[in-house]
Length: 215
Image 1: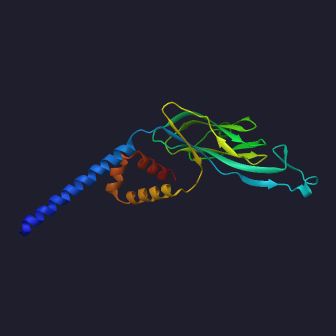
Image 2: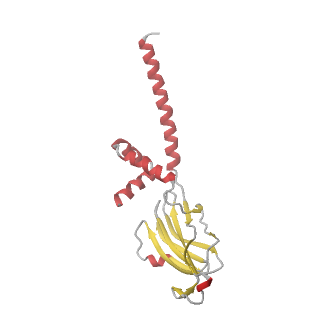
Image 3: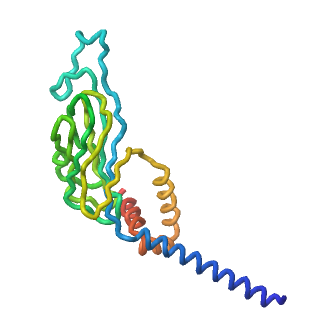
């Protein structure tokens, strides 16, 4: 077999492999770019802050926000726009299973500007709060820190929104998939060609670039 024929076969094989890889990549980008309305609700595990032993129960009095407590537990609750389209007028209730009551709930943090943070949280009952946001862009989030008189046993939310997928999960900061994806995006941003290509086709990458410029 001549060298010219071999070279032609190699060139044809390379072109076919490139076409297949490009097709697979295009399908992947199309699926990732499809509009997705999704909100993720997260909560941390209860953290014990204060406990008064029986041996000093009569001698030690601790007051938190005007309430006398013998134990104190903390949980953080977060609302994340995990989709790729904006969410408007969000009011999300979190119900907690607890033998005690909510002592206090305060705004914790957000990765975007909030004009009146204290208006974002309301205590509805001894075991329920509502976390509010007028507007959340993709990847934006808002959170609250709640104090309880007894250890919470669990939490839930009855929040529903038409056409929106609602996820509930434990809040695990620095989850491995997020770290890997961020590293992948950072590698892409070092190449002007790949940077321009992904910015044109992938909304999540554009949000990543926006968050970098904001920082």
